[in-house]
Image 1 (cartoon, rainbow, N blue to C red):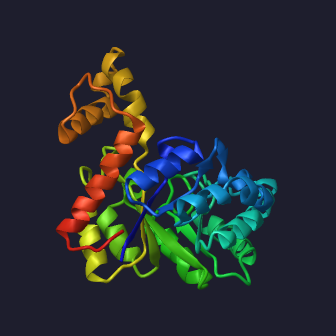
Image 2 (cartoon, rainbow, N blue to C red; image 1 turned 90 degrees about the vertical axis):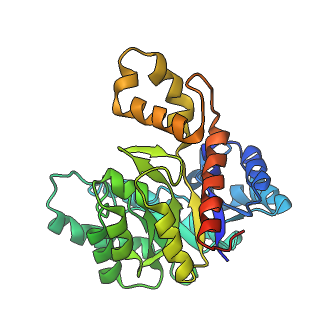
Length: 306
């Protein structure tokens, strides 16, 4: 049974609102990133247990993974790296308290002009340092293929996975991020699926996030493959709601912006979702579109989900 979760902070930073949105969609899990206006990595475990966990428990909402920013620091920033290790210690405690198996991480910001071979050794060492923080637990660190980090291509992400060779280090797949890095998402999916245990549901067209299934991510084909292979993990909604919901009217009325790539994509979204040019759309509505499009595609490929 596939489990659907989401970055519900894309609707609102308030935990109570996030819980309400999740429950309205029948979701039992969320992926925390911002809770009550504060990044999840800014919480100590004690503060989390006092102010956050009781509300989640009362609502019957769990964590699919923790959407941490761990690894989103410059490759040469040693002070920042050590600070993140301390934050990771607390996140491991929070994940354990929530019976959450996964913490999302990254492989450090790099300049595109960097010598990637030299960077590889540094990234490898620092990721192994992150793994030291999960020793003795069941927590798995999920490497996401984010833009502008070392592991933004399937080749580099897969090399990290194979050379680290640790049961607590796996990959998270994001089609939109690959597209924005000029990588074929189908090729990336096929290359990395042996190492991937978690999927972000995000689609993209011309470098702009669009409702799931309407972009270049070949999402339906991806889902069909997962269903065929009996995947029973998480699909986490990450529509990046603010770009379209908040900026749509700016790109419509500011001279010149309507003819930029983003303006053109926004008009494409209007047409694909049956929205009038002047019609306002909320961030919650974009999130609901994402959920509805995902469940529709899962139904079409015979997937079982909750």
